[in-house]
Image 1 (spheres, rainbow, N blue to C red):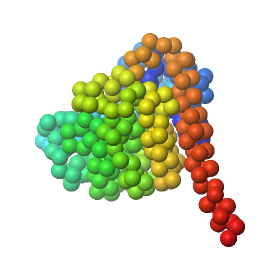
Image 2 (tube, one colour):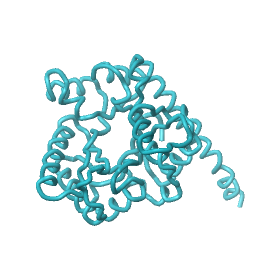
Image 3 (spheres, rainbow, N blue to C red):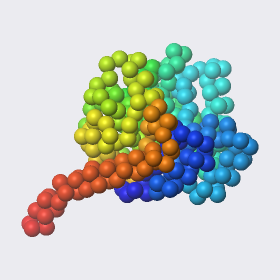
Length: 295
């Protein structure tokens, strides 16, 4: 892992798409996670947004977000498949390699793991000719899937090369998730890692969880769960993950700050992860190597 593996999420920055691209690039980031609304709401439409991205030189990490997709049936399922196809076309237009899918909150969704796995496999198959991979993320308030272990269970059950799991540190921290199982997920099956923290140790209600998630996240190194974040990133790194890390930091205060200043905070956070987390991990492993060489 190095700093080139890190990027921002447009949800973190105020201003126009141009301002977000400029702030991200000036801070040293070469990639950016976009939301579909960034593109379809852009003045001049999708074509103009695509041209802007091409001229910027910034790589698109992925497109957010397909909601309430899995576990549905009948006309509701067909409707969601049509929405997914439209979002995949947006991915193809901007060169995004990934469509993000978050676990359903719908009361109409089945919680049967086999059904969810089939639906995810169907979506992954639709993405193959478009070179768009599907990443499935467990929302901490998901109706049937709220833990990363559950998300991994259905991704593994789907057994599709174009489908992976998204690791989101906020939802794991919000659920006080245990990290022991994280190392059992092959790095090759992790589609994306999203990093953020928050400012208090525990979340005491579902309402507080949603409020924190949507308005009060902070960057890694700024919150109250630095030890857990360190363990999470080390575990993923040891599992062989070599993909992208995105700072998905929903924060109303940051939206009242100049995007350049927020992007610099993100840059400091990326250095905190690489310098404070991974270097310490390497130092911890050094004695073992020294003993092995001596023997």
